[in-house]
Image (tube, rainbow, N blue to C red; front, top):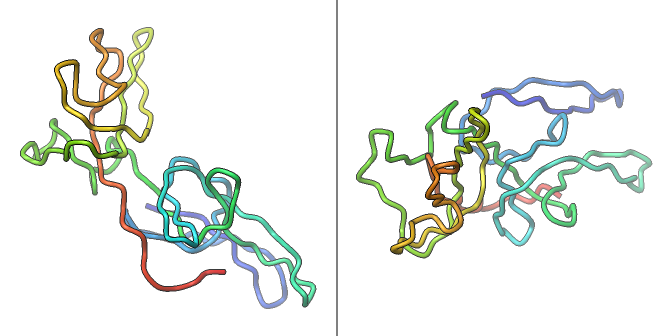
Length: 168
């Protein structure tokens, strides 16, 4: 998987670089544009699902360095992780349709799920945080539709925060 990152050269020019990253890797560089459907880690080491972008604030030396921001309230963050849909790369995902059918989610936990939505003879996929609680009425709270219009096709754990480092 590749990302585009902004880099400021020694002569203060902005250039774009392409970098290869592995799935499930915490990233501390500013993305080229706003990235949606990513995990973010803030300075309190809380991990949540949302978006990441960049902002610039003038330093005392007159430069405008780019910094990471994201999540609710567009607050400063340390790291972000790009998520591949399981239809693109199954790394980190579990699915009853894949080889790891014996791996089941833990009861009363929240997972990132890939939802297949069928509307008007079309299929589309969305990533959502979903609560897993198997009951008589279904397993995935809010996504067990009896008419089969929405279905959890894959799930993954929320990643652990990256330890160490301070990207401020």
